[in-house]
Amino acid sequence: MKLFYFLTVLIITSQSVFSQSNWTGNTSPTYPELIDHLKKLDKAHKELSLYNMGPSDYGLPIYLFVINGGKDSTRTFAKAQAGTSILINNAIHPGEPDGINACLIWLDQWIAQGKPLEAKNGDKLPVIAFIPAYNVGGMMNRSSTSRANQNGPEEYGFRGSTRNFDLNRDFIKMDSKNAFTFVKIFHSLDPDVFIDNHVSNGADYQYTLTYIASMKERMSPHMKDLTYEKCIPYLEKNVKQHGWDLFPYVELKGETPAQGIHAFNDLPRYAMGYASLFHSISFTVETHMLKPFPQRVQATLAFMEGIVSYTMENSLEIEAQRNAAKLWARNLRQYAFNYQLTEKADSVLFKGYEHSFPLHPITGLKELTYDRTLPYERMIPWFKTYIPKDSVAVPKYYVVGGQEQEVIDRLTANHVLFETLTSASIDTFHVFSVKSYKSPVQPYEGHFKLSQIEVGEAEHAIQLKPGDILIPSQQDAALFIHASLQPRAEDSYLTWNFFDSYLQQKEYFSNYVFKDQIAEILAKDKKLSDEYQLRKVTDEKFRNSEWDQLYFIYSRSPYFEQTFMRLPIYQKF
Ligand SMILES: [Zn+2]
Image 1 (tube, rainbow, N blue to C red):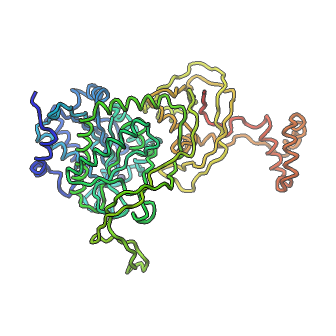
Image 2 (cartoon, rainbow, N blue to C red; image 1 turned 180 degrees about the vertical axis):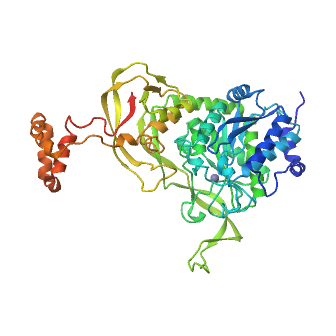
Image 3 (cartoon, rainbow, N blue to C red; image 1 turned 90 degrees about the horizontal axis):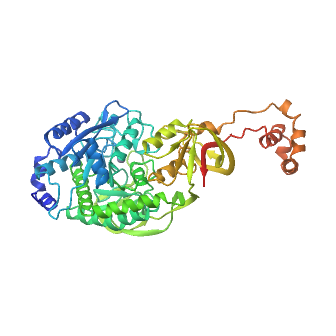
């Protein structure tokens, strides 16, 4: 087999290759142009395949383009799962299409190189798959104005999906058909590396290329070491050789970078946080909005080239560490959540621009301005340590009521293994009862998402029925299961309103009837009677309210509905 000087050749000849590519200018293709182009490449090259992976909310399909797959989709996905694979997601925010052009240029270069499948030293090209454009509805909604602060391209799509969701908040709740198609793509590949391509908003600074890595505290120790000790240092060095500085995403602690930046909490609702639940090395690429589009595309391409090289050179280590991470998650005893940023500050050398607050001639107010004629390099605070506020013991298995079809659909789509009961039985389970929660006045991403949830936990005899499902914690999807089923976890199905119907009392009492029953109830329950008398003595409002007194007794009596606020999620330890 002929050997290729894959990477070095790529760098040396990149100038001449760029001139052969149509994707280096200030334009980005429309969705039909993009798919049309990829269909032609699929036809022309046996190493390249375009697959229709399922619907989007818009009605058009979401595609997956695969480089170096098998002969058909079955063999392609088997190869990706067995070997090393990279998944790149483009245009989840179609106003930020840099990744589309970068992937197209990468393809042009690779074809011009003679489609090398291995490097000189024998390192194999991974299976490289990219979603050409994920937010199809947003792609079809083009303009030149929806990204007010962005420097190109001339036209681009819109952030919202056709149902006006931000799809980059949809990876646990899965309101969109897009999310179901994504999850199918993701689990078909089981990617070792996942990249979500974006363009930043916010402060001005010198960098074109920034990245977000998954929050290290939420990762398995194996993926944390691999990502932070090996992969990121490699990428920094590699993209520097291509002429780019790689800097962490500038998430501001205060108003300007001078007050410091902080690590991003990539909750599972985000693409990269979702991928991290399944132990993919997970990055969000954020190019800087004020840099010209062609330059941003080249920076995104450099990151992609860096990731491809890293994956080629370290495939055995990546595979081994991912397997170790899966084993770690299967055997997890304690699940931590509600991560909070600490005040512990490291520092990092930052290439910024001086800022000031001159009076604005129209608003008359002091407005933040960055001065590009005054670049600086100085150390700024870097807050990158999170701690979990809460943790819970991991049960041996969960039970979810079979009536919760929407939850079961999402677990199934995510390859969660469970057993469906075929007969009724009674057993004692650890049961969650919601004690309190906050619900916002305004919706967020189509939901009145619950927060500040408190739950009580107690052992109860529970009648199980055919159709209820038993979900063991010891499986590869363990982190997804805990993230979605632990009621107080940040992105749990309880927070996303899947269990709202259990938060309403269905039966009450009539005062005029119930007041005749309380003597009997109190006579039978000495403890309740004592609590009631004490409350009357110590609480004036209570003493003067018939309703409060009757409800106090009712809610503690056998007449009260046992299932009020009780979630149809049970745990067995
Ligand atoms: Zn974005």
